[in-house]
Image 1 (cartoon, helix red, strand yellow):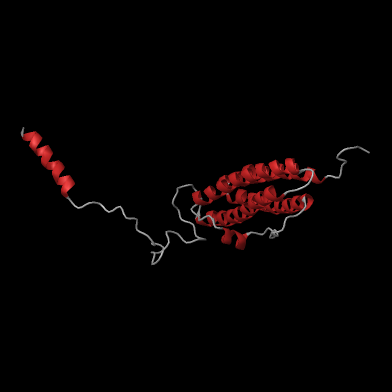
Image 2: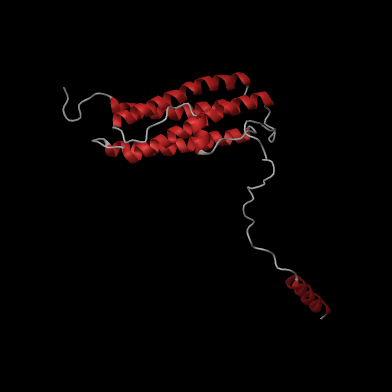
Length: 208
């Protein structure tokens, strides 16, 4: 009986206290404290065996690849929506497939930046400021023009991949080298092949 009374008393104590507030605390972005980490810096949060100079170099280069990859990814989605002409069906599907593959690369690059202790860019305005890929007009363009713009963007990314992979290898950053070669470079090279074949000048109906 004594145990039962003690249990009841404890329950009453728990329920009779002040109720917890379930009101969300809004507008915390105003008068916010300092950010957890400034963009452009690296922190040794993970013991991955790389010095700060090496990690800083890799983060800077990976953020450039990230900005260009996000731009190329969005170019594919734009062209997917707007493509017209006799190859509409094939290009409509191909553009969307490549969009999904570039989206996967975006995550891979961003995660590598975080592993290195850096801060990955994420917002459209930051991408627009950093990318080296020429701005695509808002207009709807013919399929050969779309393909040409995509191939130019791929070439910019691939040129950087060769430079960045070599520098990462020389610095001993094997993880970044692997991401650049295995994920970014090989996917872009394969996509270049698939896209460029659409602008080979061959007969659609009759061979010569």
